[in-house]
Length: 377
Image (cartoon, rainbow, N blue to C red; front, side, top):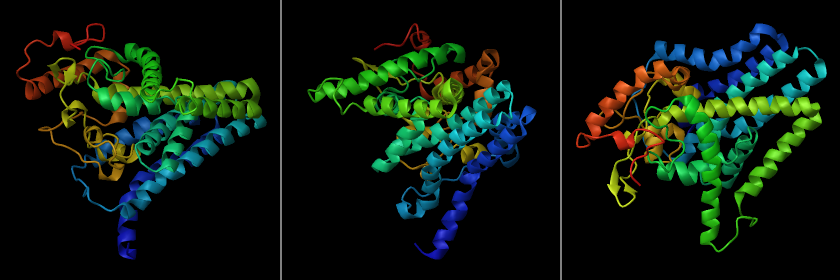
């Protein structure tokens, strides 16, 4: 790669490095305390929503044949985030538990804000890393997920979600009419069970028991226990509590995004328990430039499900002819999702249009409507 090419790829990658700016912000608000702590969620949800309105959308697509060595600066941010996140979480835990600078309510709010960062950025980066072939990248994904006590997400995502998205067998596909407050407890329960069952099924095909050492759940549990122990060493029971607060809000943020990504979209049942192949039309697409910088193109979700191993800078965006479009980026859409009435008014007309555009032959959608009355198996 020439110096000119290296400079060009660095320039293209730099906007995605904006997430690193949230780390010094977290340190500053921890030192300031009080209402300043609110800057953490505001800087993700509101700042990037505002930037989306100002900057607009990006309809351009990178060349999918771009060589791997030209993606160095894009990949580097995902590799660096793991140590950055761990140092930030546990460094601030040492600071607040040793200094006595903050009231306990402020400490709770600070770690809730850190959870929004580790959910918005950390879990998103783990999602990118878990899809890659190099083992070091998959290990970094495991470490990030363990740091929010959600390690099974890797197994669920790779073995269940990508295979069964848009069908009743995928817990993470939000059903039409299902509010986020019904979706969230359901997916917490079902995704853990489905992830374990998927790994157990793989072991069964090899003639092995679930407790065999090759079951990744042993690694998941060990990493999570290690982080809990570290939190206990730093701050005792209060350290464990703060770490758990961070983990909860990270998972909450993740599942808000999961709720948005496929809400109400279903693959056509073609009989005998089979469904059509996954197509770009089975994920909501968003081309909003700034929020895609924050989320490393996660909003180009239609292409991710179409080509799961494609690295984030090469993900393609689609027109409405090929994929349904969200009216806003994920930060604003996840805020709307927390208000069910507003969410239905925003999304249900679009789902009606999606059905008419892609499946005009289906006249009765009753069987596709809810989780309690899923479509045919």
